[in-house]
Image 1: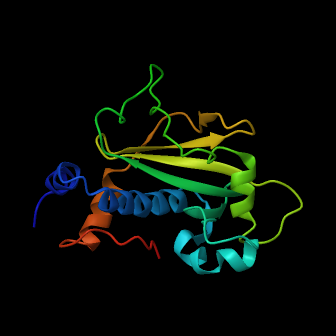
Image 2 (image 1 turned 180 degrees about the vertical axis):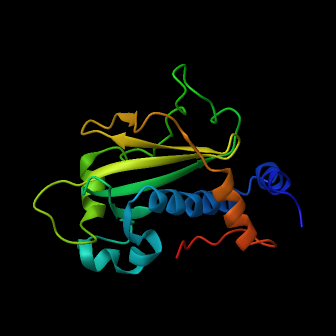
Length: 181
């Protein structure tokens, strides 16, 4: 069995983005639960029912997590794992650099559409992104505001080395699965 760093290095070197992304989602789930988020569902819970619930074609995909935050807000959470020294950096004030979002992911309409997977709402949902830095083994939560700007939540990034070790210990000979439950 290889060490944590050896496994991460192999996935980075072979550009196994699936393994790194799956690890990021597993870590995000554990981090959210440790911070008193209530996870209502994950992407895998909703993927087959999206067209029926949303009344849209198969191009509409659920977000990584639908949660109730510690402040009782319904929100979508997207997990973004980073494993490149170029994208895993810190800002001058000690935050992780903001994660990259695909076009449209930072809009209120995007998160509200996905929030409606739980229940049709009379308003908009909130959205957050968790950046999982697999170089420094840190994670930070970013709030997406109504104009798509990301801002760090909390005072400093969280240490996640123990979460990464736990996930990889559960999957010693293979990559973590995409399903987090």
